[in-house]
Image (cartoon, rainbow, N blue to C red; front, side, top):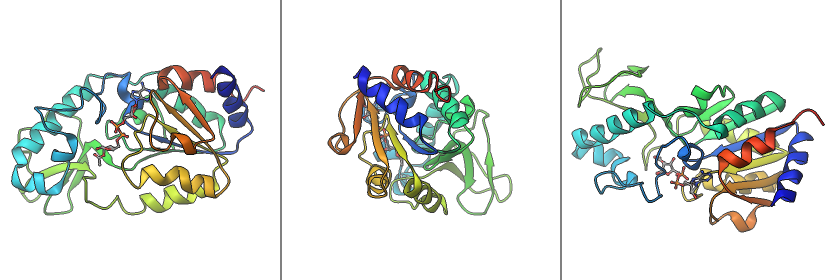
Length: 244
Ligand code: OAD
């Protein structure tokens, strides 16, 4: 494993174009529960049961209660060494893109700027009726209303069955197609389209690397699979990057 870390480090050092995909595992060490981990249930609901338009339509108060709980929980969490290592990687690699499935905003709080939040953000609100949308970190009422038209607001996250934010997929794919190295970190690789990004990267000649505490359905197809915590492995990968 140490030999693999050194090889990935050397690859990163020689790379001009790196794309990183992250999932909930990258925030696990900050105290944010993963979706499919042991503490992934909220009041016996799975995220997939609540993060969907039909659930919001039928039970807006329940779905908002879930999101207000997540906002409060994440608001008390801090970025961890994995988030900060990716900020460092962004500084050292000339063409870098971080694509996250996470809606917790911790990459941005750590300082990542070349960042796509492909599933939106807990801190974005948008109106269910008009075009009003805003970033809002404050405590919200149980059913927040739009200040413009008075209709119900919803979290600015992408729910199951909804299309991605326009343009997000195109920008992501364009960068993945040009990557020298593609890293998939802390994701179970079960949710599309992100789960297939590694394949695109591979088809276009990138070296693929997975960092996870356990194997995923994609592990066997990766050039390198680094088994361990993102908060341990990523700081090792960026230490000395750019100094070779
Ligand atoms: P999951 O909860 O499915 O997977 C988290 C992954 O992180 C698992 O593979 C864990 O093994 C791994 N993991 C946990 N702790 C880790 C650590 N310290 N270091 C490295 N890896 C660790 O979360 P996602 O793959 O992000 O979508 O889930 C993908 C999407 O499904 C989410 O964005 C969300 C969800 O339902 C929507 O809400 C649309």
